[in-house]
Image 1 (cartoon, rainbow, N blue to C red):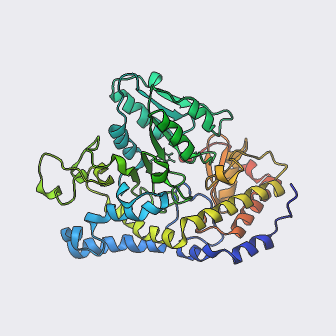
Image 2: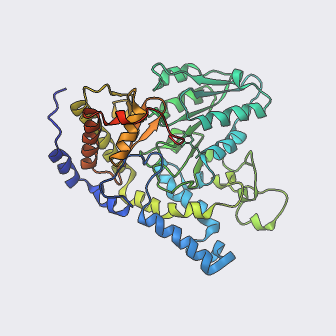
Image 3: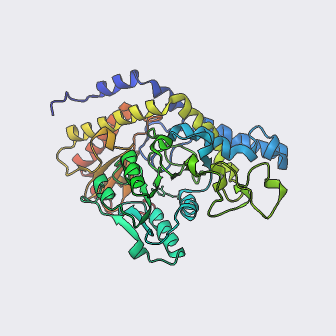
Length: 426
Ligand SMILES: *Cc1c(COP(=O)(O)O)cnc(C)c1O
């Protein structure tokens, strides 16, 4: 590599021309703290705080009438947030609804789309996905009276961190009913080729679902154009909705207008809901996949948070995010060649999500040392340090500082004072 040396001045220069730098002051960041964990829990913005407080005020002022009369009427909030989310994933407004959590939404969509029939009974997933997704798949296979050991195919990884699209495609045949994969892998940050996988699956008659936990709010998607059948996501990561913030789901419009697998009164067409009939008339939108009363106070922050995404633009967010992770990787090569670190995330822009994945045998103790120096990393057992420079509130100079802090820890062996073990939450 013949790259010129990256200095603090290089970073400052990039910050000066960064059009997204104005958003940092909209977030509750702490001076001299470097929050590199926005891919686990995004920070609170002032706008999200404002819309949450408005919903509380609506409750205070209107009581029950807040459902229809409030400043942010609760009865339509899930649809409204769905509409605001749609551009982030390349969907049409009626294909998206704000509801549930990833796991609950996966259960709903598997109950709706996983229909084992004759020889076609299997599900393709991967061996690297987040456990909750795999638990949901196994319990749905169980519910059909089938054995997960025979009906769940978990595509193997060659290196323990990434997947090969060709290996995924090689598993597709007429015995597979459905495929569920992450868009971005939660540990290594690998971005899969959603379009290529979807096309190959459809050629074999397989229904395609994606879990966008680590890509929504980090990069653009074109789910409707790519013909993805369904998707789920959470909003407390890149979308900054707060702890337990309400997630979302997408169903391609070609599947709309049917009864959901798991129905409830909020699955109803809105004008019919209060007729209180025992025969459900489902909404003709993705709203049909809701079940019970929406969690308004855990949705309201999204009204404010999503405004920021619209103003900033997901394309600009992605461009800055790629520049930040690229600079971080280059700085690690430049400053930390001697300490046994290894990058496990793909290096190419088109295969990388919003975080980098640094491997080290002493990752747990290094993360504790980073925290003591006001850098908030994310440790994944046994040897993974995830660092997410979030485009909306991390600057290029922050990335420079974090790398130098890490270098200082390694040079002075500051991590040796900590046990190389994980805490309860990691
Ligand atoms: C964060 C995450 C989850 C969490 O699921 P919840 O139901 O929202 O708790 C599930 N799957 C993936 C891939 C994740 O990254």
